[in-house]
Amino acid sequence: MRTSLFITCYNDTLFPETGRAVVRLLERLGVELEFRPAQTCCGQMHANTGFRGEAFSQAKRFVKLYADAESVVIPSSSCVAMIRDQYPGLIDELGNESLRTEFATLLPRVRELSEFLIDKLGVEDVGAYFPHRVTYHASCHGLRALHLGDRPFRLLKNVRGLEMASLDNLDRCCGFGGTFSVKNAEVSSAMLSAKLQDVRSTGAEFCTALDNSCLMHLGGALHREFASMRTIHMAEILASTEALPAEGLS
Image (cartoon, rainbow, N blue to C red):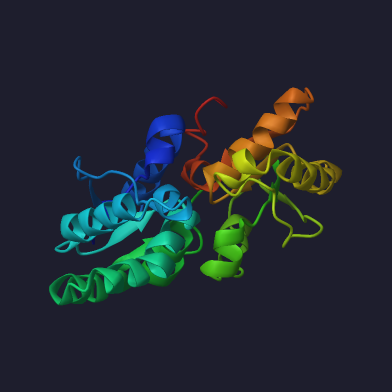
């Protein structure tokens, strides 16, 4: 199977280890990966802050760039949610029938990482090894927009050595929300504080998620508190093996 990796600008700029983990994981599973260097941002930040022209541009660019892709995998549920939920309205607003048809054809081939593994590859045991106590944070986009359900838990359950720590109030937002945390810093900080109480109470060594934006928010607070808990994208856990542990853990 051949698939194209849309790494997202967030991962590319701030968390390149996530992209490397996705490559290791999928190649281990026999997937032939391609990377299209012309990729840019999905346009979510622009759309959410009222820059419609820039959002139109990014949506058109994405559709044109991946129109002929066999499939597209994205290690960020917020970016997939942007494509799945906001692109239809943007493209309808443009009134370009050709673009609308191209997008409708492409959309079923665009998947978030856990969707790709379970729904496309039909794999739940990816051969991972991660001997640590882990708790999982369900990001708002993954939970409410993509309805990922139990997919992340099914994947984590099959990681050898991993001890799963359940998180109370799983549906509680971490308070990041992209530019929300900048525009509404006090509210964002209060939401983060409440979320951290639940995260810390698990006694986990690691907090994982499918969105590095949430993990950056949580990780920054844990770092400021000198907490021993660390954050890690789920792709890094799933890519980890006894021979090749996650980056920074060997």
